Length: 276
Length: 274
Image 1 (cartoon, each protein chain N blue to C red):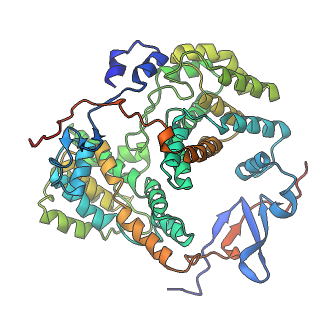
Image 2 (cartoon, chains in turn brown, green; image 1 turned 60 degrees about the horizontal axis):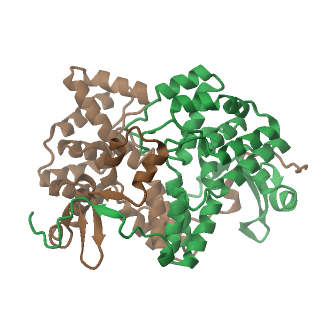
């Protein structure tokens, strides 16, 4: 990036040439036979006492933030690690198990699918983005009602509110209990999240808060950026994905929710003949 | 948990119909794609490209449409071993990773905004908005729409369909466009060819394969979602072949960039200051 900025007026091929065999980075590297470095710190001597999640937070954000790491671990355990193979990302891993694929392929497909719209990473990222925007608008004097109505008009949804299959989110109570334990339940964004729910549940939309709003609000109270929150959330689902794969892998092959021919409801064209 | 009074949950599809084998309700005796008996009629009659079209469109293509899609498929099949997505696949190959991971790597990388399927998706949206109206194109190039920050995709950093790191329009891109136009004189492609210099001047970058792919798939009536996924699929053959080749060659004959990485903030061998 530095080179690119310096050579702003360079042609495309000149820019590419400047980077060819030349990757300058402050992110990290392996010095073979000696050590490894992450963001200027020796992994063996300076990061060796970090928890794994603290290490990941440091890798993503460049900051040692044990409270955020603890928050991710606790909330991932409570809210995004359901070992239920009916849930779509988990089901992918279970299908990989019943079809006798590998654990890493199951996990990578499950994580990739977690970047979903009706659940997972899009609502997770969207909820934090919405809370930051809503807070700024509130500070500018707008009411919760006008903020929410504008959001619904612009995006036809309010990230963090409403839920497929059921309106009540059973994860909220245990999450709040956990947040109280680590003294992370008193922030202004969490309060804002509840104010928004208060308006929405009394409105004609009848949306209730889902766990994405709680999780995002607590991240916002720690000042985490939307992108950092997104990256650190990509691992949040593996606690549910892996057991679903293992379960199906350990059962007889092909036996995970098999479908007979009559389970296809065809609304296709009537039979016809191909003419070349 | 089973409740016999409840109707069975089903997969509803316009694409597929099956008839069960008499001795096994879990095996199909006949499979129909959009009404055509795949194994009793299509097999031996339809080409792979025609079948691909049928799967997406639910009706057979005209001969010219099949030729255009086939030509695009040939042009995209192997982006070559310098392409980001193919390099991803080869990295899986040289490390002895699963073959599926080679294709996953090619898909994950080839999905992106730079030369990838998301670029084709966005370029298709431009085509939908601008059609063959040059003024609209110049406006959208000057003021591109911004991705929602709530989306997981990074913002486009250049005009979709054009190579931000290019110089002049590469010969193969022009050859592909010429060839596709020769098949049917498709209006969007003819328009793109005649306005290419103007568009390139305003984007300050040359037309790329992604731009020709988007224009072709737009001309063939695919929607942006179909174009995105077709572009992903059509570029996999080369990734697969190169991954297998490098798997046999091994890591020692593949670039590692051993001394080409410079750590700009190395704390040194015995740093302990925290």
